[in-house]
Image 1: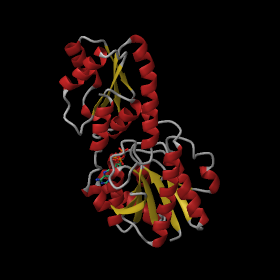
Image 2: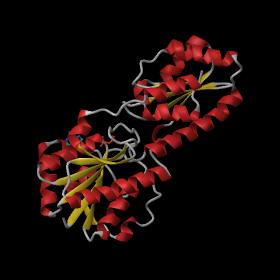
Image 3: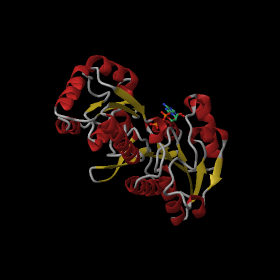
Image 4: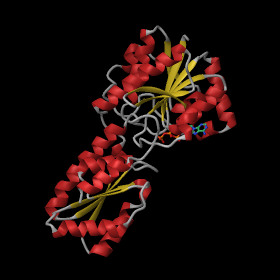
Length: 319
Ligand code: ATP
């Protein structure tokens, strides 16, 4: 293999740049020609490509977002769009493609793979909803951002003796809410994986007030319901003053943590090795204390497991 490319796709995640950097530098180390495709799969359709050199990734390891830009490409969901992308890769004589993104992006990779293009996927999404990797690139940074936000909200919550409902990202999964709730000492954690019991949330609040608690933090994953509605319902039931903070896209940005940079560097470097060895149609993850290589089919057929142990622990510690 002599000529390969990398693209970032789906939602951006802190650490994507560290992964691109590792891919570029590892490729150059092995004397491969390495190219960046801009704007994910849309860049394949539009033919947006640039040669990457050592300096192309200088000063990027600490930057959030992605220097290759990212996009959601509805056109790549069509047979016509896919044919254009495949034709472009063939025309450029690109033999392998590394795709940094979420499970949707791996489905796109699967389409290319079926057309004979060698691909390797690297999991990067703050939602952390991909199986066979403990963490996806970006999750640790988002978790630290949310934990820091909880600390800040807690200061004002305590000073005014209020209840705060904080809504966090995660789409259909509650991983950010669960672990940030555990790290931030939230009183209740509301996630899509567990049926939500408003009466139990309210009775926790009342118990807290009775034993002299000055504040309460309730963490809501966006996929579990609206923080605004939950706050209204709690106010009605408890007559307490409840405020809402929706963290939104600030959870996506920021300098990646050391953990995310290391994960991104390891997975990026391994992805290049895999293409050189002729292995493709796989995702590289960090799982069971080592780098693992998982066929896309297994990734699609499984769901990331929800940590019931952590959920129970968070409930016990917030007793
Ligand atoms: P995130 O978890 O951050 O949202 P993602 O990779 O899951 O990342 P998606 O928007 O689902 O994000 O997918 C990214 C892009 O991958 C889509 O815009 C589309 O171009 C391509 N893609 C998704 N699903 C498929 C599919 N079934 N077939 C071909 N391409 C797909």
